[in-house]
Image 1: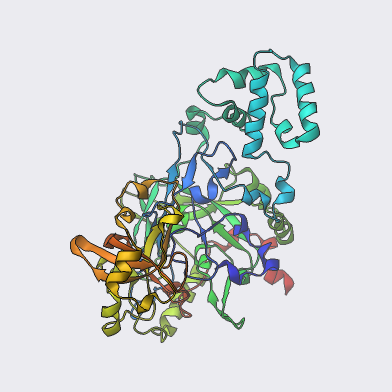
Image 2 (image 1 turned 90 degrees about the horizontal axis):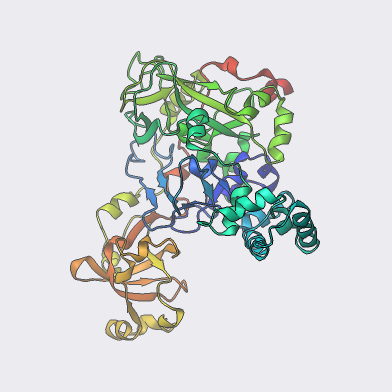
Length: 548
């Protein structure tokens, strides 16, 4: 919930440039909702014209599952994310060795906090303009001096476009040589360093040694499982981190300003009890659960079983990590405020791990004591005692009409939403009058309804990334044949619905109302990951101890 972080604290919040606004299909569990998405969601950079991947907005992109645990009996409820995936899709063919690049949207560059840093960076329109200029002179065989004159002239009225024009005859010829791509794309390629597949094999690091599955630990939710044999001493996954300078920035507050709990992100960050700083991995390393021989956690971490992997600082692959390990707390704080990051861990096996085996690290004794205290103090929540799992309702297709709801309502936490996209022209939508509730059903449907079959999850329209999709509040009026419904979707007004007949029941989804999901329970477990070897944490980072 980004709305709970103050503007001052936001500078010290390392995720601030790595969050994705949830503005399409997600169920918006809070007023201002953002997602911290690991792997491609955090590692892939932005390019205005070379972007080749897209954070998918298809209607099956978001997978939410609150049925793993029961908040009334499971003390792990709300302690892990129920959002299982956000798809990243190749927008065009991507060659081996090519860098994955996102389209953040140029408004990302134009935001007040970033504009000063990126005001001279070329936008898509600049690449197009530069391409037109290169095309204009392609037959003139310009030498270096002539190209310099062209650049100087363009620079007078458009510095961004001038900055990406070829500066030498050889560069110009290279851009014009690739006839399979537009000149604008070739200018984009000239602006980045090209890598080969051989370079990647020699210098890259494997990101898919582990995959997510339901953990063998009873209260842990998801876990990390080896996808291939991992010998002792080998890399499981790199874990570059974002730094947040005070874990209080993640306090989740009530509307009166009092602290209710911490935001869930805290559970996925690494910390030391003598420091306020959080180190938050941005790869699927966050899936790896805790195990130690000190405590029986059940599953594959029973009595006497220890972790099969460990954390250690990376000093080779991430060039900045070794430098940052020598910095003071205040020096790191200054870097984070300037939008920089620079610390990385590696997850290394401590014994052979077989394919399909769950990977564990030791979170340390401080984390373990916090979990024991949670076990001792946990009580079932008193809020929303009639809570229903929205995932179970969706899977069971427990769709009730307005008449049925009057006799048999859903629990207080449940809201019903229907998929909607602007597949009709605006003039095709005939909104009922404000007194529509006084009209007969037959008259309302005959005069104001539209066919809703195109909103099927399996339709070709739903796979088209050019459409914008939303789950919007809706009412169910009638059940029809073949799991078809008559629905009213509140797409234009909160009071007057757009009415659809033949609407597919598969496109109805149940979601939690704001602040009612397990994530917002005041007694859900919150504690950062600790270090089994506390000597790893440099003394100069322990600002709480230094302040004393």
